[in-house]
Length: 449
Ligand SMILES: [Mg+2]
Image 1 (cartoon, rainbow, N blue to C red):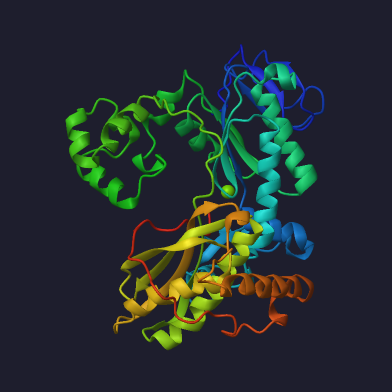
Image 2: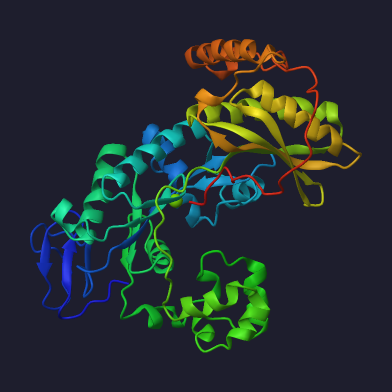
């Protein structure tokens, strides 16, 4: 919160000048901008959470100015869901993860844009690179958000962390044409909460002095990671507001929320000792699709799986990653999730090898059950140089690698649609599928805006 007090320091986010604020300044004395941040701890707080605003939608608007003043939804398919929607669409009640038909009912004039993950990955990387220029302590949470620990960077940047962050936001707007929101605090949890307080183009501060009182009357659901089920369970036991958790007996919270219980009490008291851990590597790359109609037959699901394998492979190649564990994800018509995984003899980037493993997993799950969603993911990464060598028993892989490489080049030149999406590249049956090893769900493709 930008709590004003007579002793507040004040920073203009437009002209980046700092002022002593003797009282509540409404406009910057230097440039007249109202975009001031002011806080008694402005010079001492250094833990930030940065989150791009409506990331996919903002990129699409940037690249097509005719969309600028229109409600834009990035998402797809008849039964697909909203990946990201712009702030105009949000005023109609459209939200991320909302089924598309519902979103279009709320906002029939919305322009729907198909996601272009490759493009978003490139922009995400540019943002990440700029973050790393501020501090090596960057902990990405998804393609478009990260924690940054800016303590000790004052000398390097000749600026307080707050000023460094304001410069960053301005630079991102100027160089990448997208906007970010910043939360600044002393603890991760509060920085994340703060970045969400005044989106888009936000900059909010929660300091040590007001953390507990700020949290007091906020709903428990504000705590990152608290799902509706946990919220309902806690509410039933009388814990509706974060303030209610402050004095709660730890044993009771433990019974209600397991090992998360004591943590909740700490958070309610403004205590979150977690450090920023730099460079949480990408743990998995996956692609999934919600089917237009529920499907049960292997023959119907197989070509869809192939297309997903092609997409996943493309993303692996773009990220310069090769994976060894293949995970198939299915969701039944009645919303049960199933994941099945297998480990390959060597890492791969190739759609054909991913598909060969994926189809073995799929075949075993085609037992009459109808599915509404199918996805395929890769994890257990190594460098591409270690991938797809084959060996004396496997001479097909190097050939596949050459073929896929040639096709990728054609696609890069003529577009995805130019090349047939048949099953032409698929391998014959894989000989010795290994048993499922992991039940971990692959990383979601669409971050929340
Ligand atoms: Mg975001």
